[in-house]
Length: 123
Length: 108
Image (cartoon, rainbow over all chains, first blue to last red; front, top):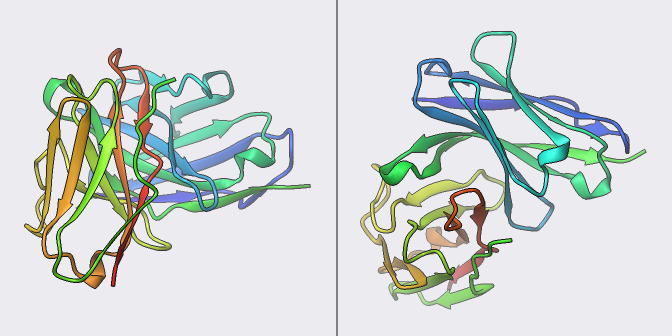
């Protein structure tokens, strides 16, 4: 059973960089075939896909966030990370990491999710 | 940018069938996926590729898609099915991964 767990600061100052790490257990992120993903949910709102990294290292980002987002594989095994630069209060949200699976017609959907971590942007 | 449109809320009595719709221009060519999110919890996949049910999801959950509309049905809805439900899909180019705005299902 794959499990994912987000970690990182719960409070970030405006204009700084938000950094989160996702630790995966029950499977290797380098084993192939999956898209390691970040999704966020603003308080009381819906879900927003941020982006994902394929096991090969290729990245895919939400066009609306692309200039501010970096997703990378962590230096420690079985971790991947999210960096969101120049944050504002509008980036306050619960951030989820998830495993993306490529099904029929290579469409990616998210089959395992972490529990999410709330990040507040405030001075 | 691409959008998926859902009704904000759906309400049924226990035992009735709840139907939640999701409309999007690319749905004739792209699959719809459905997620259930209970209060304070992470989303859970309940339907993938329009109508397939992951293991462990009760048979009362089913999905269909026709034209620009996908539908999630909960047959014999139970109080425990109260949750927010989100559809998910991509635009025709495959570049925009989008969730619908979510539908709050009330069973009472």
